[in-house]
Amino acid sequence: MRADARRNLDKIVVAAAEVMAERGVNAPMESVAKRAGVGVGTLYRRFPDRNALIAAVGDHYIHTMARALDEAAESASDAWGAIWDFVLWVAEPGRAALATALAVLPQEAIVERAEFARVRAGWVEQFDGLVRRAQAEGSMRTDVGVEDLIHLLNVFTCHPDQLPEPVAARPAYYLCLMLDGMKASAATPRS
Image 1 (cartoon, helix red, strand yellow):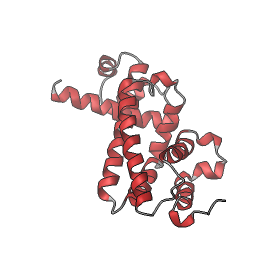
Image 2 (image 1 turned 45 degrees about the vertical axis):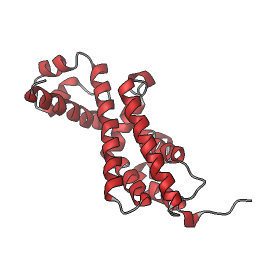
Image 3 (image 1 turned 45 degrees about the horizontal axis):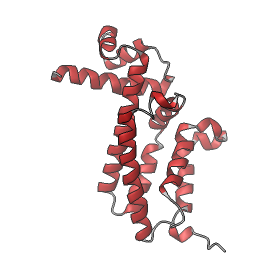
């Protein structure tokens, strides 16, 4: 692929992610083309229908999450700090809005696609490694697993309509409260 064609493709996918975060997955294709700074014809040459564009946005989203987890793991001084940084990154308003928009789609549109599943499995494995490291370092409760964190992120970012309005309006704040409860020092002995 030529460099200019690759740039246009990348611009379209990033623009589509932004527009879908703002207006949902049914946002007009013309809005995506305008945001990307390309003609509608260029958009349709790259993505012949909305489903192809949505699939590309889903792949972009999961690749972005994987890179963010890599960056959090590299820049934090310990595993708990990396978990904290990643959770807050995921909860940023624009990103959470995109997750919400993508969550309304049928599983086969995004989640069951091979590329999405492959990258997701990789970041889940890496996230699990951070959780286990944080537990080994003594900073995270041992009765909490990566699935617990993924479920929380899913509820707070993909399904805010299922949360009370004050919680949905401030997901990062409430996720921080939840993370505080996952610290090893917060663990309550169980009988």
